[in-house]
Length: 186
Image (tube, rainbow, N blue to C red):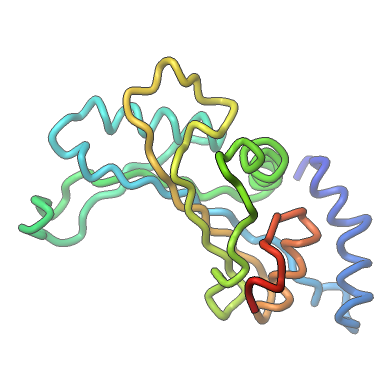
């Protein structure tokens, strides 16, 4: 893996800081990022293929990697969805692209969110993985606002090798995730 700025910082600063905080006996015990999954739902694209193409292109620009189209597994009459219908797109980032995306997310995209007061520190799954949602995909600098027909939201899931949520939260704090003040949440 070509060392990105954030990966170099992880090796040089974050690993020793985590070691100091948790006192790991083995350097391989220190939690690390495994992957970041981006998911964008496009249920309205079932009627218009152009919307799905636009969503895939936007996701590809944001991630720097080709997005996969996700298909419905079951039919659901209330949502007017049939089995096998295109309903969204996703990208799984690993390695250098994962660190580059995380760097852009924290330093460029999150500060561009309107009325941003930090992210929820309770959105961990109990196994050290963090999930968050973004309401507007146009916060990413790669997206040209003038060419967007529909503003979409997306889910971002950060998977770590941490054993529990406390280790994962500490790791993400070192990666400069702007969690809300601890007085507001536990």
